[in-house]
Length: 156
Image (cartoon, rainbow, N blue to C red):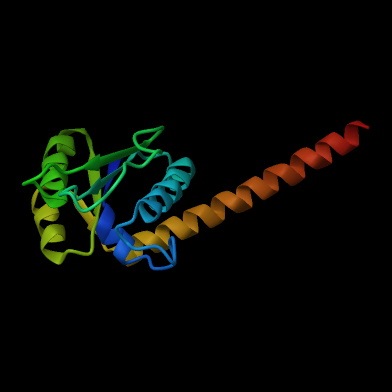
């Protein structure tokens, strides 16, 4: 079954990716923006839509400017609702359309997602995948640019 969506527990990933937005608090708007920027690049590399879910129980200020553009969707849970609940509901709803991958460091949440028919990845594995995909994309761009430069220079 094809992967139809990646669901990310936003704060779980932020807490496990210290190099991302270093110097900023993990719950800051700047840290969220950097995460969204990096996941947008990842979406450019792989083409699978990504939904980032943040607990929105009043702990954050401001909304990300990159929210819900292109293949990235950013959601905040309402008061009385958790990001985990939103992720579980999405896994259940996307199930008939294909495989859903959930990224979280919460072991109980990963087990719940698997019981609902989804796949789960730890934050460390996902970060490695993102970094590898972005490195491959960078190499492809360099190759393409060299090829185009060579083709242009031959025309002269």
